[in-house]
Image 1 (cartoon, helix red, strand yellow):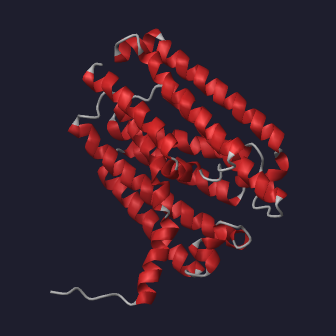
Image 2 (image 1 turned 45 degrees about the vertical axis):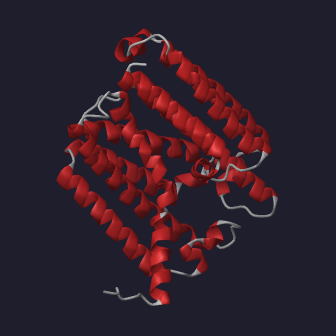
Image 3 (image 1 turned 135 degrees about the vertical axis):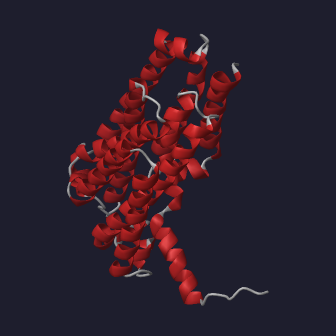
Length: 303
């Protein structure tokens, strides 16, 4: 039996809704799995199930945030070389349609969280939504505050993942998540500065940055994060918890990852979207996969 075909206009509208949700950005929500992974519960079904739900909840919540951002930024996006292709900016969806889509995703996210996850999880989800709303309305216009908000969003994901899996979140994980997110956010701001120099100024906060400042800050953040990671792998607490004195060898992947992202940012000028860089760059994907496999062998195989 042949299924009925949707008209071309409806198909394009469905595609626009999916595009507005930005599913490629869901990789950021992979941070919710880190407490489970490092808590030795990746193979424990009772911890995996709520983490899967938490991941879905944050994906829906993030998509509602993206819809809100696009509604607030539609005028600016129309003058941006890349963001002008977004559904609202190019006119594929109306503001009313985008608002309805965003509210539906938000309601579904809150409903799933309230029904299937611990009450404490709702606090972290609410903090994430409130932070993103404050960022979209006001805080993104202030240099330094804008990148701190981005970094805190990553930390909130980790904390929410810990609650979902019932795993205490290590202070090391919080520190390194925050530092890494700051590093990546600086790379995005560097791309904004390059656009401003070319005659497009997508953000007011770029006035508080310069290429020299961002390049120096990225180098500092890379060094600090790598040192923090080495201290983590060499600490007696970490060795006792995970076993083995060779954990520092995983820093090989970390150093390679930072060097590659710096190369993409400073040499190839491709730092507009760290998520897109991860999807497109084979070298970076190999490094992240190598790091994950290395840790999996340490934590779950004993090698």
